[in-house]
Structures are given as C-alpha cells and as structure tokens.
Length: 590
View 1 (cartoon, rainbow, N blue to C red):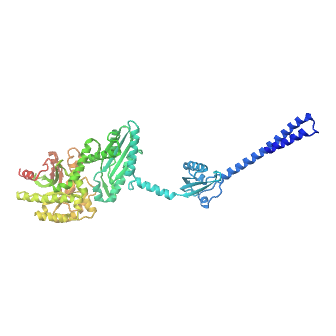
View 2 (view 1 turned 90 degrees about the horizontal axis):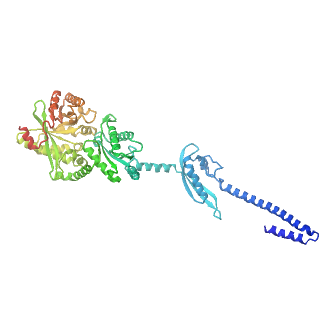
View 3 (view 1 turned 120 degrees about the vertical axis):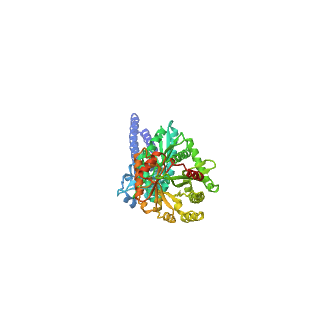
C-alpha cells in the first residue's frame, strides 16, 4: 500500500509540473490516474487473498489427511482415506460418538484415550483402545495427530470374568452376597426418595438340606441348589433380585412396592409352591421344603443390616414351626436372642448336669401291654426351662457336641435299665441316633464299652434312625449299623414315610422294625390318603418281615383303626405322655 501511495504522489507531481499539460486538463487527468491505480490495487489484493485462502485450505487438508497406516491396522479393517479416523466405519454404532468426541478433543490439543468395539474384516466383534496424541508447531497449533490402536479384547474379557466372579454365585448363576447388598442398598435409597414406597426382603433356608448332603452326597446337594434357583427365577419378576447368600440360604428382594405385606405374602406363597414337587437327582426323588423370613422397609427397619437381621429372625421362627413363611414381629428377636444364648450355653449343659431323660411307652396293640419305651432327651435350662431336642440338637450337630451327648444318653439309659431291673421292671429302651453320631468311627466301641460297664444286655437296647440317616450310611458305605446290630442291638427306622422314595435299603440294611411317622397317623381320621399310606406301610413292613410301630396315636379311633390294619405297636399321647423314670415305674404298676 505504501508503494502505491509513493507512485501516486510521483504521478501527481508530473501532472502538476509538466508544461505541455493544460491547466484545465490537470484535475481530470489526476482523477483518471487515481481510478486506474485503485483498479490495480484491487487486482493485487484479490491475488493475495486467493493465494492465502488456497494456502489455508491446503493446511486444513493436510491436518485431516492420513499420512501413514500400519499393516496391522490395514488387516483389521478397510481403510477409508477420506476419513481421518482409522476404522471409524468398522466401529459399532453405539461407540462411534465416543470415538468422534475423542478425536475432537485431540484436535484441540488434548492427548486422549477411548475404548470401543469394532467388527474386524472377518466379522468378529473385538474391543480396541485408541490413543490420539497431538503434535504442535512453534505457534502451538496442532499440525499432526498420531494414533495408536490396541486390541484389548482378552483383557476386557478377563475383567468382565473377574467382575462376574466377584458378584455372581458360580454354582447357580445368581447374585452373590456382595451384589445382593449392593442391590438392597440401591433399593432402599430409591424407596427413601418416594413417599409411600416400600421394599420387601426375604431370607429362605432349605429344610433338612444338611441331611440331603450327608445322605446323597454334595453333588446331589449342588444339583438341588441349582434346580431350586431355576424354580425361584421362574417365580419372580425380572425387576426382583434373587441371590444365593451361601450354603442353602437364598434371598429375594422385591423393590418398588407400595403394599409390602400383600406383595410379600403373595410371593412367599408362590415360592412355597416351587417346593411342592420333588427334586429329581439321578435315581432319587428328593422332597425339600423351605422356611421364609420376611422384613419390610421401612416398617421393620431403615437400613440393610437391620432388615437382614430381622428377616433372619423371622426365618428361624418359620423354621421352628416346621417351615412356611413368617413376617417379622418383635417376638422374633426374642426367639433369635434365645437361640444365640442356647448355643452359647449348650457346652455347659453336660458339665452342669442339665440334661434329663423322659420315657414314652410303646404298647402292644393286640394285648394292650407295654412292650418297650423310647428315651427322649430334654434340656432343663436354668433360664428357659425344659427345652425340647428340636430346639438344641441341630446346634449340637453344628458344634460337634452331638457325639458327647449321644454317649451321655446311652450311658444313662443303661444305668436306668439297671435300676428298673432291680425294681422288677425289664424294659427294652430305644434311643434316637443322628447321622453324625452314627458315622463316628468310635461309635461301635463306645456302645460296647457302655454296655459292658453297665452290665446291660445288648438285646435290651435299640437304636432309632431316620430314613435319611439310613441312606447316609448306605451312601458312605458305612458299616457301623451292621456292626451295632452285630452286638445285638435292634435297629428301627424312625419317621418312616417322610424320607426318600427309594426303598431298596430296607432289604440291604439290618432293620428289625419301622415306625410310621405321626404326620400320617394323626391324619388318618380325616384324610383317606394318610390312612392309605399307613395301611400300605404296615403291609410293606410285614411283607419284609418287620415289626411296625405307629407313633402319634392320640385317639381311640386311631387306635382301633390301627388294630384293624394289623399294626403291631402304638405310641402317643392316647397311651401316655413322656414320663420320668419314676413316673414310668408307677405307670407300669397300675
């Protein structure tokens, strides 16, 4: 622009000083020169503008042009030379936006990483990590971006597997305890935000599952747990959470409910229906029930720990009643506390001589005379009074005290028989034996030692074992029953009819009698099915050469029905309640 100004000044001086130019033409000539000069200046500026614009476009093209692509990248996907982001076309739709946003950040000068899924040239879906690393000129402008693509599929799969293992029960595929608490806490957070919102928590424990494991083995137990999870899944909504907390304990979470009690009762009944049919494992049809404890937010607690504790207390109350479901109430905590104290006091019971024995007569139905008695263990607790074995023997099993308690019972029974003998009363006595006590390697030697020490004939002592215990001995190839029978002890099956469907063990094991479960005997008057089961059991027992005892006889009508069916012996409140040793002696004398 300065050059044009100097040029114009030079031309104007010539126009003004040249004598050959008339004065009247000087102004017109100056205006014409200025117009021509501005035309040249416009052409010059346009040329510079076009040149600069072309240079800028070239620079922009260079910034978005692929300069180098590695052979490995070319094997992964088809390269689009028009796109500055390699393999963008192969990136799945859900991840494309993240990759493009990362590219824009790189153009602004930021080093950035982004993970995305891509379909390779072979159609395989794999994970890749992209790194965009910008480079700058001396003015701080981004002039090049170097990109790195790394296949991270294996590491992603490993992480996902670890996350799965950390939150999932491997056996059942259900949520584990960790994920369960996370879901529970999230449900409580959501419920707190909405007025009138509730959440329902259920704890489920399978009934007699330990017997299944001991009897049929852990593989069968695992199969039952797996089938249980499948049945429960089918009974619940997709929004509900089902978890296995460990062992045979499951948990159910019903989030986002407005009528908690009604929803809980409805789902609990549905869950109980899941256990109506037996579980089929190899050649066995196994009946397993469940006990359900229920706690409702916010009625029964405001945080996960309290709700879990109260659902657990309700579950134990349901279990104490033989199964079913129980919604938490304050008395549940009392029972729970009592259970904990009983567990702590159990080890002191033997030392402080708190165990006592009661004896219930078994009577010959044909003659009406006493045939034998069953020894029943009771615990005279200093605080809770007389406690039935159902409330403490499971604890004795878990703590390992059952063997000591069994030896105490056998020893005291033999001592009592000696005292009765001195009083002129000779009665066989049967004692209940658990699976753990029967499987004790020293049980045969201990029984033989007790019999010898008390001078008790082996024939006057009998053992009662459940079907489950008998099956357990068969499954473990345990010969302790045969060895005990070899000593002269009579073996009887207790609670006959409520165990496993296979009866092959009746021919294989050393059994002298069966005792029909009281649930069938007690229902004979009003239930034809129960009566049919009792009749069939009597016929089966006799066909196998076994004596048959009916327990739970509580009316004359049942007594008479049993007599017509040909049952050998009866036991129950209709005959006598369990008696102390002295009471029994007096009872036999009347």
